[in-house]
Length: 326
Ligand SMILES: [Zn+2]
Ligand SMILES: [Zn+2]
Ligand SMILES: [Zn+2]
Ligand SMILES: [Zn+2]
Image (tube, rainbow, N blue to C red; front, side):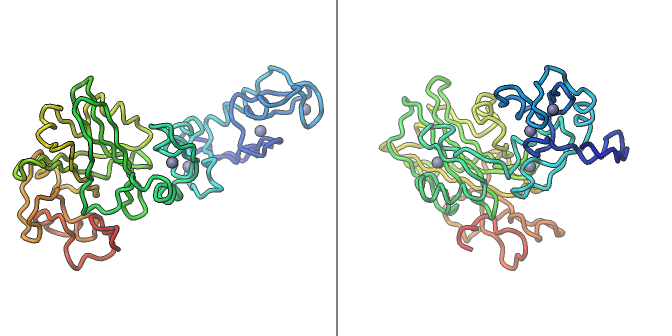
């Protein structure tokens, strides 16, 4: 069982943790014991019917193995999704937080979570294929294109969700009309860790169908998918527009906007507030402005002006804005 080879390292205990003798998973609290002292993990104990120890056939008791629970709480443990590829290790008490954002976890379909119309669940690597197959209207694959929504009304609650790939990363874009708050919201969540999400900035570009000189660009940091998007909307930490204003962007029930997502860069903050003008001659039409993308170039000397399209000669880094054409 517990190998007592303990290395004290900055207060944390590095130890090979005991496995549950029944399921062979790493033990997790609460740990109950049988009458002769076998410790069985929480999930196994819960499903023992009758409550008999599978090892010695003695009755299970309500006696906890406190020492073992304490050891486990201080020890560094691997992510339970290790077999799927996660190399993350953490103190057991941080496990819950990690599991919410572990990209190797079993995930429910984001459409199913919000709209309840899909019962698919699977791994992150399969979500995009699932969307292409089952929710092709909810895929935002060509970031050069606009999202066009028909039958939009500022007097009807609506919610639209899109999955957007960026290299091997995935983002969930949400647009919501809330007649109660009299607001429209746009937000982008990165499917992954909070830390990774903070490295991405998204832009929403809303174009008027009535007047092409009228447009709004909103830029903000991404949240991760463990953070409830409804809470993002409630706190208005995203693109927000009063519905009265939104009505000027709708013509015959049609509304258009586009999203971009890119790695944030230091120079972004200085320029990317509110409306931004874009004078790259390559782009006649208004585009969401942004720096050159997450490329090696961005780490160079002068970041240069902001361009929507990636500059020539960029190598190595992900091709952010037009990744779908690669
Ligand atoms: Zn077990
Ligand atoms: Zn036993
Ligand atoms: Zn993990
Ligand atoms: Zn689905």
